[in-house]
Image (cartoon, rainbow, N blue to C red; front, side, top):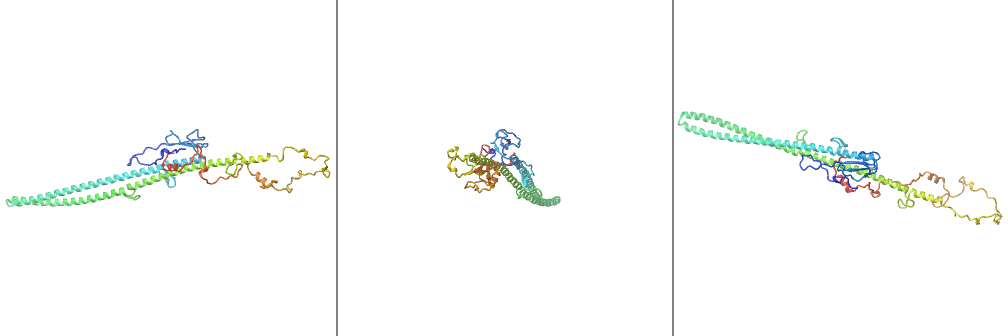
Length: 410
């Protein structure tokens, strides 16, 4: 039969909607229907069902009928496949293993944490830029103070020249010189403070740059601050989640393959057992071996075959007055004495005729009607299995294609 998952042959990748790269199309909605004869279908399984069929386009088209021999076993692996796809976050499918939905949610959490780390790094960069701006402003203030000091020095020289011309001017110049000295001291202090601020700003910028690098590149499971991790950490966790989702899909596929193989083996055994019981007379079941029906017919043919000719040769009978009766005597009882098993008559074997022993009789009585000595092998090759319209064998290529599937809703 055709592969019911052909439209899903590309690997499923879980990607948050706001992550880099294009968002893939939504996965098709899958449905399963059941049937007792492969013709009439219904959505809810019952004990008499023997077939199931898949639809990957919400019931528009359906796969070929898939035969199964045990409804409860088949429903178990169908339920297991659903759990691998849909179990909620934190709910184990098997010890230490989780569903594709669980890992999808973990990947989304990792994406959110990475975006938070990126935002924190942006804030740190913004603070560093602001600190650099403050340092520039301080440097400009220092330059202005230095210019003021130069101006004061020029004014002092001018005051000194004017002092010789006027005592009042000299007094004024002296006062101006004193003020200029104070201004120069203040300017020097401002320049020193600006230099310190610039150094602090540079240190803050360096620290912010280092913290931003940690938010981006800290190794997996190495927290940047207690309980918070880098974008690289969350990226690695998302990759681990994807690997777990692929393993979940592979487990679901193995469950489906095992169920199909069990059904195929059971049907082959049933067909072979029927041949050992009912195959026509003189038709071999295996080279040189025949069915119970064949041997029953042979035994019946032997039972009805005459031991002597059909004609009675009366001319050979001895009649009254025959001279051969001169020394005749009355016959004694004969047939009635052969009843206690003490006669010295040979027993029948595979090489000579004779009487049937009580051992052989007991053995024949213990064989049930239509019984045979066939023992089905514990293992055998696939070429012993006959495919039908509703029973197909998975090929290696089909198994590889199914192995690429991620979380599929069942």
